View (spheres, one colour):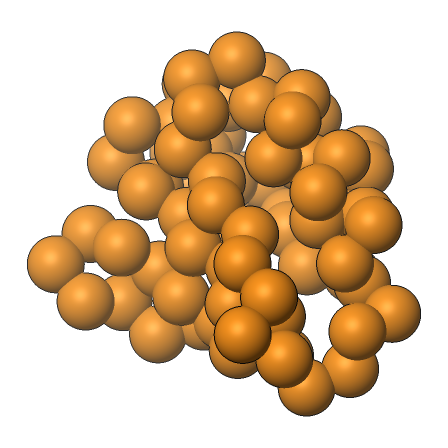
Length: 76
């Protein structure tokens, strides 16, 4: 299982996550910040648990590309 976490409040809207992992991230038209699709928000941490490991590489690329390091990807 993959656990992806996004600290949305710290997002600067660079769009790298949406480019590398469009099936997981979108940019909000409202405020220009990243949105982690199908996630739950707990105190500013948006978390998505994904059983399918197919998105691991794309999410890792998005995490590595993020200039403010607000995306974490863990395999549990």
